[in-house]
Image (cartoon, rainbow, N blue to C red; front, side, top):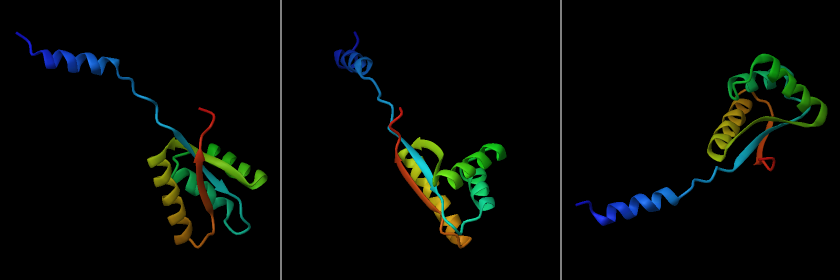
Length: 105
């Protein structure tokens, strides 16, 4: 005879629904010192963008003041943001990298 507690746990788990995690945009900001080549390199290395897409994002940063490097869960966004900041510091560039909630989802 099956344990009634086991049936109860199975029923409860069936009723539970997982919510999608909130997504976060990682933004690169324009400055007068970080080279365009470095921004493209960061987009390729950290955010795994193909060269053409990395160039287009860099141009958006250059023209509008900021560009979206990618949209990720919070932990991934924080890791990528910190990695880009560390690389900029190592290469002596003042590249500003921020993140904000993605309201489009």
